[in-house]
Length: 368
Image 1 (cartoon, one colour):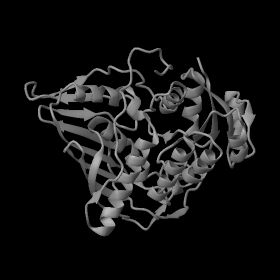
Image 2 (cartoon, rainbow, N blue to C red):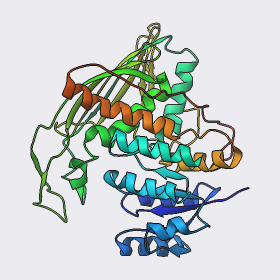
Image 3 (spheres, helix red, strand yellow):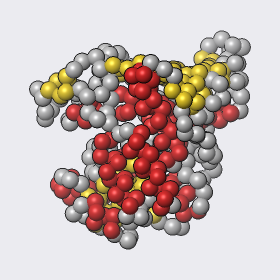
Image 4 (cartoon, rainbow, N blue to C red):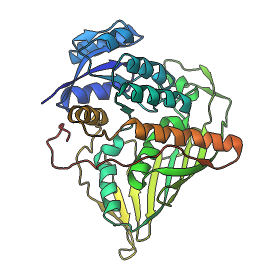
């Protein structure tokens, strides 16, 4: 069994669950070393997870021949800088979402990866979990008939009341669509296929946001990105979808994702999670019925996509979370804003093809 050695750039809030799962769940991965601009964060990770190496900077990490795959856990506006330098150094890259802060940055990353023949891909990997994979099988097996549409909603009042350092959510590369849209869009294209055309309307409802959480309570943040984003999508299949993401609205729930078919309706779990309840409505039943999860990884399994990529690289198959997916999602997200600015429908240039579904007959922590 080949063990893929991971080098991590960025040891912020999201790194904890990655480190837990790489250490305790995914048997074909190990963390060889970490680095962070705040050295104390990297030092704590090294001590807690018994990581062999602490690099002075990302360039030292990229130069280490023991690093098989770079995990980029930096903030969205930093993704391009880190991923591009890793690719230039000859390292394959798995990045947190989004692929990049702009489509132009995404294009350059794809160019570099293809030029050097390296893997490039990344989060979200929640679509590989029990919830979305079970929904995919239900749809593929005809439980709702022919899919005709979908609706996705992520509604909240922003992160400044609870996040310890929320400013980046309102800066370049942030906003509700770039932050949460990848979960919903990745789930939708894995359920319904690629997106052909989009339109959108966006705005920033409030010019500033005041942080009310510690330790930055009272800090005023300038809003640089749209915080109220609505979009329409026509899928290659002909199905029509809507998506709404916002940081501007008081609401008692966050997520809603539904897929409509000729013979029924499917309530899909929160795409920010790996499991969650699935409800199916068929007219002959008259009410929603909860469906059992039929795939593994219902718990928080972040790093599942990383493990899949590592195994795919080792065996020569196509990774399920490659740049062909993350770039398609990035193009769709940016096109909502472009449509809003230009007042027209936008044709999506990239094409997306679903990869093989997950298998349900393997040992936990081992990928196919």
